[in-house]
Length: 89
Image 1 (cartoon, helix red, strand yellow):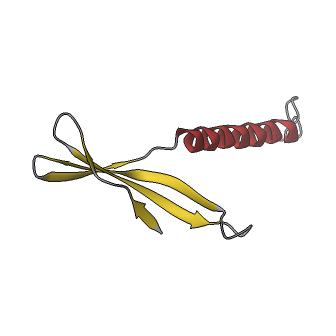
Image 2 (spheres, one colour):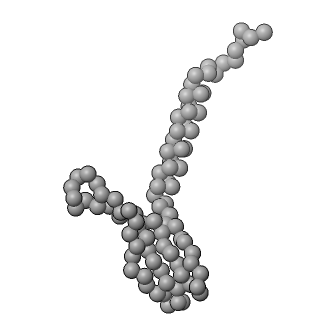
Image 3 (cartoon, rainbow, N blue to C red):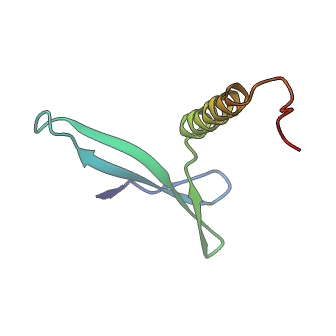
């Protein structure tokens, strides 16, 4: 479910409307989590969308990919012996 905040006007004349995604958890009726999605910016008769960027999620994804690639590279090196294969002709 999406929730829209109260519109407010900036000093430069732009109107900002915040948007959040709200979801309930299964622990109880009062456990609700709100995650920012972005904002609508209305300026000069034009509307633009500015998404919210979760830098923590991006950093965790980068760390996960780096760790997975390091594990795969380590396994590839360990499976192949360091000495040359002399049995090939």
